[in-house]
Image (cartoon, rainbow, N blue to C red; front, top):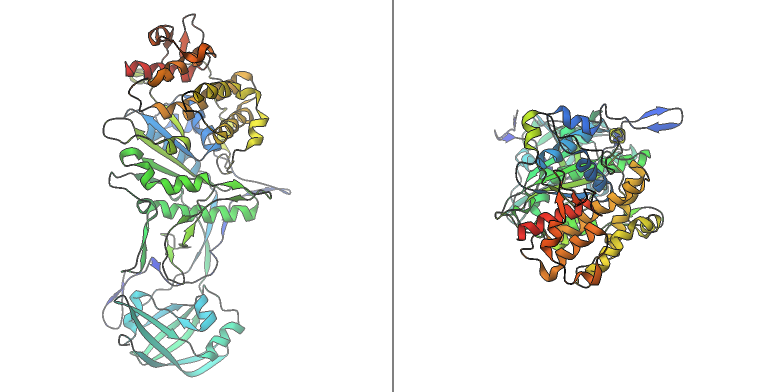
Amino acid sequence: MAQMNPLGRSIVAQTIVDRTKDDTPAPVVPIARTTGTATTQPRNDTDLFSYVAERGFHFPRELVSRYLVALRTKPFALFTGISGTGKTKLALLTAEYFARVPGTRATRWEQPEDTDHDFYLPIDRVTLRSGTLTPGRDQLDYFNVPAGGTETFTATITNLLGAHGDMTFRATNLVSGGQKHLTIQVPSSVRRAMEENGVGERDYLRFEIVEEFKRYRVSLFRPQAEEVEIPEQDRYAFVSVRPSWNDHTALLGEWDPRLERYERTPVLELLLRAAREEEAARAAGVAPAPYFVVLDEMNIARIEHYFSDFLSALESRRVDDDGTIRQEPLNLHGADASRITWMDHLGIEYEIPQRLAIPTNVVFTGTLNLDETTMGMSPKVVDRASTIGFSAVDYAGYLSGNAAEQARDPLELPADPTRDADFLGSLRISSASDAHAVADSLQPFVRLNELLVAHDQHYGYRVLNDVALYVREARDLIGDDPATLHAAVDACVLQKVLPKFFTWREDRGGLLAMLLAFCIEGDVENGGRGLDVYTLLDAVTVDPADRALRADGEPAYLPRSAGRLARMLHAIG
């Protein structure tokens, strides 16, 4: 409940203030179990596949597997397809599942409340350096200082860290941009006492009102701390994209100079929590807990307009010689304030810096509807994401409650590894070493890229490294069976190459026909010249799982990519 100050005006808690209680963030302690000298993080009590099924949803295991492997190689995935196929639900269920593992605790510091009898001014770095206190906006009415003027008042100090007696404080009220900026100058003896006795930036000076505006009793208040667990719902953010979004402030918020506060967003709050978790996990030597951002109907506005800063920051990541991941930060504000902080619903304080690097434990999933109401995807977006299509629909299985049985896919993950708390917590950045490690398995992608050169649609080294990392992750998680590695390359063609052509309304230069021929047979004669599209389409059938089968019933060379291309060419007509 709001308190009342001496002038009868309501005092409400500030969530964003330009003052400080601490130079360093409150520590976050990852929950870990120790066995002997080894520290292990807890595991989920069930696997992701079971978690999804227990909630009444069915998705092909290989589709979920492709999604998880994609997130382990690049923390940005896109779900495409018609409405009602479960794109948003899978993204949310995955976020909820990984948030279930207890992974973080944070230190919450006691927050004193102002009343009509007393109020608390925080000691910040400016106080310790120059002896200046900065009241919050809702504390201005405790003082009677005219605009542009200076007033003094008397404070009775009783054994405040060795300082005592009546002392004079000076209050100055500067006006800038029509706003009051009140500061209180602390006597030098009080400042020396604070320096000598280890007063820190979580401490406060308590002012008890003796005579309104003229006399106060001042004492030191040191808040108590307690550990609290970060709730599951604070580890993921669901955001519905709006058609009007045209810059990053829709996701990151902005500084309001008129109100002198930062207008936050759920995404910014999540990034701040994830950054705190990442820092603490690094100090503890464990993988940080993952945090999820789900952007629903992402292409209802132009992705390059509101998400371009994120794309650039994610793409700037690189690994130094010492193994440290570096990246360009996001620009949040240029506010001229000593410190901007936000206090969440748990009472945990976070600093909002001028620039913020995207924490490496944050993964982004966007859903896209490909219809006349949405925007197309630019090459910049496609190149930086794994695009996973939702097109297979099994009405018979849905109505009967028994999904159609499918043979085990070579790219299907075993269930148990998904229970690990660090399954998505450690960022991996692709490099040439990945390509060298699985060079033989990459040959289908290399040959396909050579065919794209003649059409000026080929890819560079970064995409090859990304494909290689995807294949390595599949090998490490599933096994080194050649069928698994080949299926991983097929998935990369489907998720990295073909999305570039999703918006084509014609087969320009026979490129799609050439790609289909390659994905059916693994080779193309004469660079694909003279291919007959109808002959190609008659040569394959697409099964309910969107895999292309040749006339003899055997899978095509790259069955998933061939199935997708066949559907695209049928749609073009």
